[in-house]
Length: 274
Image (cartoon, rainbow, N blue to C red):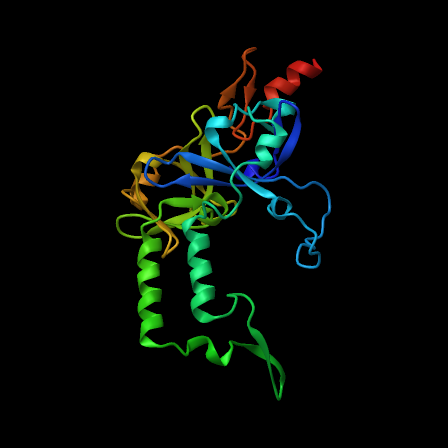
């Protein structure tokens, strides 16, 4: 899925935007929306400086349902994701924010409760120069009612089942007895728009060992601890399939082989040359 970031979303009447992220559910592992940036080129966000900006022009990121998408191509055309919608219809899709992932809702609640941005603390300078960061004085000054509302809101977010691919990559993969590694990538079945495998990166050795883990063995995705819980242990990894991004796993009508990213394998290139 990491390879899909930046792909062009192409409508029948032209290019509709570029893929920024994918949103999927953690119950059936199906991708629900594509987060698409509809602006092109270098654009400054000056909507707060101009009062003449139309309301519909303020939202440039749109969520396209996967039911309106076609199957991405292989080979040289792999950088495009076709959609049945026109460019105008894409611009009328729900805007980014109408379906936020659990990770984004958590950060929004965190910023609201502590009254400042998570990564926007004030620099602290001591007698020896730069000494770190100091949050605002009022960040931890809350009433009992505010704390109660915050905990209720956190409980509501805990029941969310929509997740961002960019946020999930890097989550810890927790087995029965120990932490096995991190989520290095997610493998997408583009015909059904379903997450088929996660790439378990053990972070051991150079290069690190990577294994394909079927999503049916993943019990739970916990956003609060940034982890995926599986039924595996370290002994199970020895019998699992290793992950190599250049393995020939896809084929086209001419029986040419392509790797996980849709790039032609070496055998295809040799046939073209010779």
